[in-house]
Structures are given as C-alpha cells and as structure tokens.
Image 1 (cartoon, helix red, strand yellow):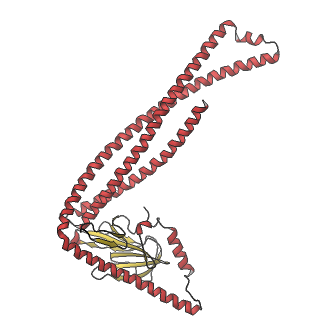
Image 2: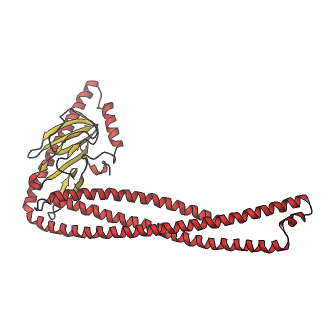
Image 3: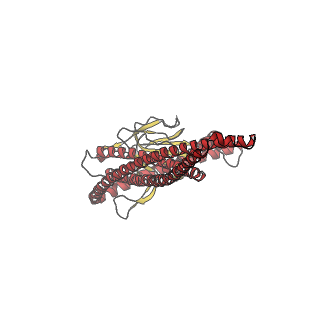
Length: 400
C-alpha cells in the first residue's frame, strides 16, 4: 500500500504542475480571443469602404497572426489534456488491479476467521492462555485483527470511490478534448478564409506600387523630422549639462536625483509599461523588415504602429515631463515626454491636451489619435521609446 500512496503523491504533483500550465494556456487563449474580437471589429469598420488599402491589409495580417497563435495554443492545451487522460487511464488501471488484490486479501481473511471460529470461540481462545500476560496479548491481537479487517473494508470502499472519481474525470477530459478539437477545426477554417482574402488583397495592392512608394517616402520624411526633433532635445540637454557642470566646477554633469529616480523607475517597469492606448493592436513592428506589399523593398520603423478605433486617445505610458509638442510637416502633432534619460514619442495626434514643460502622470491622456478619412478611417498611433539617442523596441517595454 505504501507504493500506492507514493504513486498517488507523484501523480498529484504532476497533475498540479500540468494544471498550472493549463491555466496559463487558457489565460493566454482568452487574451488572444479578445484581441481577435478587437481586430475583427477594426476590420468590420474598414470593410464599410470596399476599397482595398494597406491599413486593411495590415489589420488582416495581424488577425492571421493572432489566429495562428490561437490554434497553436489550442494544440498545446490538447496536448496537456491528453497527458491528463493518459495519467488518469493508467491510474484507474493500477487502482483496479490493487482493488482486486485487496478484495482477495479481505476474502481470505473472512474465510480464515470463519474456519477458526468453528474450532474455538474468541472467549475460549483468551481463557486458554497460560498467563495473564498471554491472555492480554491474545485479547489485543483479536482487537487489532478486527480493526485491521475494518480498515481493509474502508480502504476497499475508498479505492472504489477514487476509481469512480477518476473515471468521471476521464469522461470530462475526453469531452474537453473533443470540444477543443472542434474549436481548432473552426479556427483553421476561418484562418484559411482569411489567408485567401489576404492573397486577394495583396494582388490588388501590388498594382498600386507608385502610390505606396510615394507614401513610403512621406513616412520616411516624417520619421526623419521626428529623429531631428529628438536629437535637438538631446543636444539641448547636453548644452544644459555642460553649463551646469561649468557652474558647479565639475568636469562632467551628473543627473539630478529626480532624473535618476525617473530613469530607475522607468527601467524597473520594463515589460510592464501600460499601452499608450486603451485598446489597440500592433500592425507594424520595430526595426528593418520587408515592406508588406512592395517586393524587394525594406522599411525601417523607429517604433511600432498601433491600430485602434476612431476617436481613441493616446496616453502617457509613464510619469514624466513633456519636452516637445510640435506639428509634423504635412501631418498631425507629435508629443515627446522625458522620463529621466528615457524619451517616449507619440505621433499622429490631434487635439493635443498637453504643452511643453507639463508634468504628466501615468495613463494621462495627451491627445486624440488622428484618423485618415482618405484611407478608410485609418487610425494609427506611431509610438517610440528612446534611451537618449538610442532607439528601443517598444514591444520589449510595454506589457504583453
């Protein structure tokens, strides 16, 4: 019986470990489902205009990415449940074998007791003792033997109940597995439809090469202007630092305690910063990558593009001080906020609610994200993070 108990403990720990893994998978699946619902909403808004645009194509690509991730998550969930099923099936088989052994032992005990009860009674068995000590020992033996039989009977019933419970678990887990496989099939069908739609969009968009080349040049110009403004801020800070160092007689300038605190707190919140929008999806990533439509053309994004709903607000991802508010030539407003040695940049804003020198709190609204009505209501926030003059990937900083 000791081996059974050890085995049960081992299986319990394994199930607990898998249970935690299953909870994590389900939380991730729920979050992915929420994102898919949101991208579906954005696509439905975009589809009100039948014109095929890059914005619609980017949102569709994000939808495909999310659905692929969802299917992968369902596969992982099925794998965990199959592990549960195998463990429970093996445990039921082992418990049934142990139960049969216990029943045989118990039956032998009953037969032995009945045979011996015909030869002499318990009373005579005790009275026939040669001494008081022997009589006491025989009495204790009979008592222990009776208790042992009772415990064996209880153990048999406990194992029967446990087997029934495990069988119910098996049935539930098999039902869960079937439900997941059905969901996977539906998601796969939806994914195939979206990929066909993606191919149609791509074919149509590739016919607008000159239009996209023009837009690409315009975006490169805007990015260059943003970079110049950021560089201007950095140069100003360097000049201020040199002046302060000269006034204090120091050879180099050190950050103020307030600046050090802001930088440290910002760094401590890496991967935990709130999103610069309440709801949105990333439709263009940081760094150099292939243009989604133009062949053999690479694009460079100094931050990320976040697609959101019309009228959405941009908000500060961390407490800081507004360093710049300026109009991007041919575009909307941009806001730069300093957090010690870190800068966050929010561009394509209208109705800006902050000005240079303002102190802002985390999640404070800084403006409304502009909507391009000529591009079927495209609403995209361009968001960047810099550490002085070094560009950082915002996806490494904002919460997942």
